[in-house]
Image (cartoon, rainbow, N blue to C red):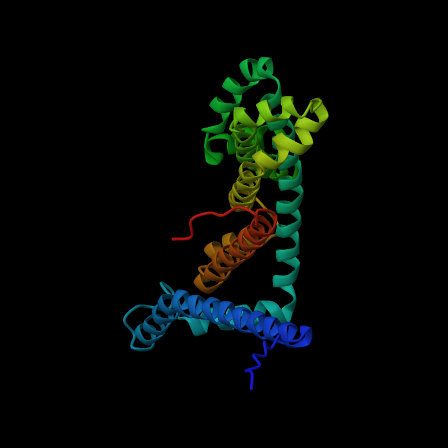
Length: 285
């Protein structure tokens, strides 16, 4: 009697179920890892808040000097219920967005022009590099003198700050494209437009996105400077009003809002960067 060897082949549905299960397990593992990282990152801030609250309750420092987290939370609640916080936050966000769009767009434009045309680099880049290192506070008096205390001066201050990171990173991103890629482009008979859109832009995208991230951060910093120097509305106005009335809780509210919104915007830009550069296999530590 001969031995019959049967080779069992898994069905297509079985393979699909197995792949689906493995994918779900992989996603669950990634989610668990992200939650674990978030918990570790939140440990120090939570510990600081607890110690801060306990020290305040024990009277180790005066409330006028350093209010406790619960006092600051109470000020948050008052501003939210009255609607003041929403109004001032909307004004600040609008200023930051408009200033960033103006400065970032101009920075992107000049970064492309100077990156593609070497003669423009010789003409414009030295001046841009000199202006880039001037701090916001140094030029703020001139901007106020020229444009007054209205919205124009604030937008100019924000736009001037967001211009340079976008410009320099776009310019460097274009100039850092590997020359060997152009040799390949010549072999493939790429014309100038194909070189730009199929070669230069994809290769320079990491630098451009880094410029976007830095530009957003500097525009937010420019907003802080602009509103603290002179403003009748916005989060900076709340901080100034808290200083004038010795309401320390209000100052902390403004500082926390600036920090939280800045972090959220930066996280959104990082998410965009990770999506657009998902093909890049970079070191993760």
